[in-house]
Length: 244
Ligand SMILES: C[S@@+](CC[C@H](N)C(=O)[O-])C[C@H]1O[C@@H](n2cnc3c(N)ncnc32)[C@H](O)[C@@H]1O
Image (cartoon, rainbow, N blue to C red; front, side, top):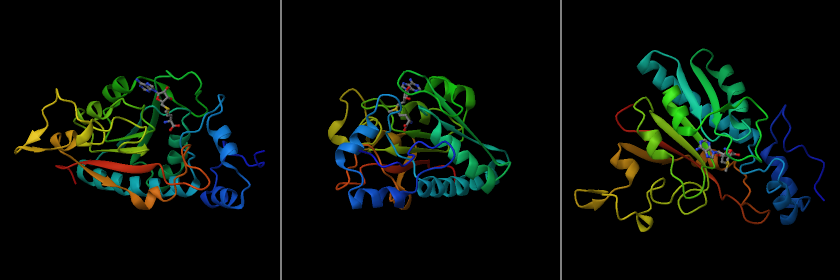
């Protein structure tokens, strides 16, 4: 039986420490957690915590400041596959306070997954169309669909300085292990990925470098975490090399 705790409160995010203490005290069992995350009405992939969103907003505000200084114009952050719009909503509240006027953030989703309904503003757009329409500076994607790679389309947009992926990385269940994360053991034979005779991840071939944002990832809780086995999801940034 789940404790009376509002995991999907629309006014505030759950505290990381509250949830962890419920795990540690046994107030949430593995079965409770599974039932909560896999419920059909409002499934949870990433449980966005207050601490996680605050740190991500601080990170993004620093990035925006750098791009703003270079380009002298408002930076657009685009979330694709945004589900119910929760992440963008709470990031917006923080970002518009931290760096007013310098940033705009928009949530989009194709609506393909009917079980996920917008709770906060989400524009109904396929990720490819959203990228073309918005020409963003920064792209966010939380829990990209398994075995799909949306990152090639992101990198092909010249305005994109950086994209940030949230969820299971590498061999996990978000994106494609080779096309998204660059794991050579999963490479596609048809793609030529050799530079100087050595294997190079596709993102590097396209001029991006990968940075694991470990300080932010410490505050993540996701559906594949169990009370006794955690840290399955992470936050990873891919930065275009030629810019800042
Ligand atoms: C695993 S869910 C993740 C939802 C949300 N980002 C989260 O972390 O809770 C994947 C989302 O991608 C959306 N989606 C699927 N195909 C899409 C497409 N071609 N363009 C944009 N969104 C898409 C689905 O509707 C769904 O909301």
